[in-house]
Amino acid sequence: MPRVFRQHLLFAVLLILFTLPANAGDIAAGEKHFKRCASCHTVERGGPAKIGPNLWGIVGAPVAVNEAYAKKYSKAMKSHGGIWLPERFDAFFKRPKAELKKTKMSFAGLKKDAARTDLIAFLNAQSDNPLNYTAEMEGAVEAQQHEESEFGVLIAERGAEETFIYYTACHSERIVAQQGLTRKDWIELLEWMVDEQEMDVIEEPDYTLVVEYLARNYGIDRPNFPAN
Ligand code: HEC
Figure: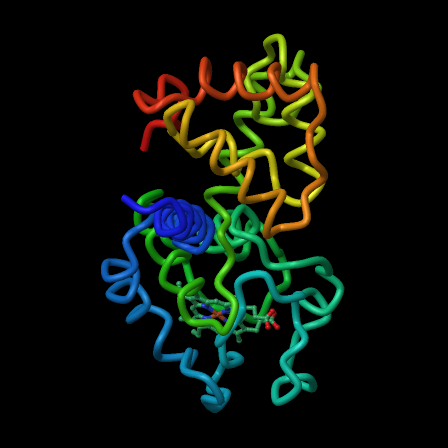
């Protein structure tokens, strides 16, 4: 394969890794669960308020900021504060009145964990900017597992520090952790990052450390590739 083409291919792979929504939960199943909400909520962009506010873009949005619904929120909801992140939804949808005592939302709750997960995945998709929240949560879990490591999700081994420093200059360290490449391709990727992504040239002895580290820990057999 011509080298330039290979570099583009590598870049395409990286792009895909970073743009694919890797969220847990089945959006189609979530859409079915949303029928239980649809008597009171629309979810399409620009949809009207019903008994409750329109929910387009609600995942990742601040609580109680829908303008068309501003005068109707309960005091409880208005003072709930913060951002609607998946874990807060999960608690709220499980038993709204347990989570937020005086909410006006008269809905008993979705008891099944999977139903809530799917519903949140569906809501997240109804947005201009869906959150990549599973990746973030997985990142948090991995970070905990490697708590002793100062290098984010990277395997703590000789070379991790140098790799972390260079990659995080322009990318997340996850760009490393999610890859599996041959030594030769790692070298080409590093060249490409220097030539076209304005990454600093990595001088020796760091260069060898980084390449060895990548080839050893993030090779083509992907010994450390996160399991799905
Ligand atoms: C019986 C009507 C009703 C049903 C059913 C219902 N809701 Fe609500 N929902 C409301 C009302 C009313 C509010 C405003 C609550 C308040 O101000 O305390 C609300 C508020 C919300 C909010 C907060 C919105 C914001 O702007 O911060 C979310 C999110 C939400 N509902 C999601 C859902 C989902 C998902 C379901 C289905 C599992 C559902 N609701 C079922 C009536 C309902």
